[in-house]
Amino acid sequence: MMESNGMKKLIALVGVCVLSQLAAASPLPDKPHVYVEGSAEVEVTPDLMTFSLLIEKSDLDLATAKVDVDARSTLLINTCKKLGIKPDAIATTALSIFPEYDYRDQQRVFSGNRVSRQVDIKLKDLSKYAQVMKAFVDAKITQTITTKLSLADEKTLEDKVLVSAMADAKARAERLAASQGKTLGEPFSISEFNTRAEETYSLRVNRAIVGDSAADASPQVRLSKMESGEPFEPGVMKAKAQVYVVYLLK
Image (tube, rainbow, N blue to C red; front, side):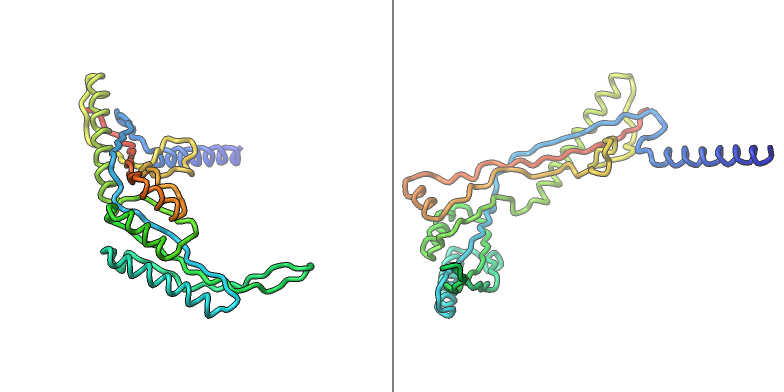
C-alpha cells in the first residue's frame, strides 16, 4: 500500500511537470487575445542582372587552347570595363583543364585538351544589356548564357515589405477586436513562422522576392532578337512577407 501511494504521488508529480512544460511551450497566452496573420506584397522592377557563362576551347595542344581562352577572357573583361562595369562586379574562376578521349575500335584514344573558365558578370545598368550581349558575341561565347534578374538592395525591400505586413496584422487585429467590443493591447508575440502549424519542424520564414528571370539563350539568338528591334523588358518582381502576431485584448 505504501508503494502504491508513493507511485501515485510520483505519477501526479510527473503529470504536473508535463502540464507545466506544455504551458510554458505554448505560443499563446492564457489571457484574452487575438492571433492574426499579416501579409504584404510589393511590386518592384529588377535593377540587377547577373550573367554566368563559360569560355572554353578544345585542342590537341594544351598551350593553344589556353591562349585562346585567355585571349577571349581578356577581351570580354576589358570590354565590360569600358562599359562602366566595375572590376568587383566581374568574377572569373581559375582555368579548368580536362583531357578528352574518343573511343575507336573499343580503345580509348586521347583527342585533345578542354580548357575552360567561368565568368560571372553583374550588370547594374540594364540599359547596357544589348552592349554586354554584343561583347559576348565578340568574345565568341557560343555556350548557353545563364541570366538572373534580381535587386541590388534586396534587404531594404525585404525590411519594407515586412513592416507593411506588420501594419496589416495590426489592422486585422483591431478590426477583430472591435467586432467583439474589445480594444487591442500590446503584442504578446511576433513571428515570421506559423507556430500553430502541425508540422512545426518544417517551419520556414514567410518572406521572399520572386520573379521570372530572362530565359537562357545563346548570345547569337539574343543578338538577332535585338537587331530585329525586339526590346528588352526586365519585367516585375514581387516582394512578399507574412507575419504571425498575438495581441492581448483589453
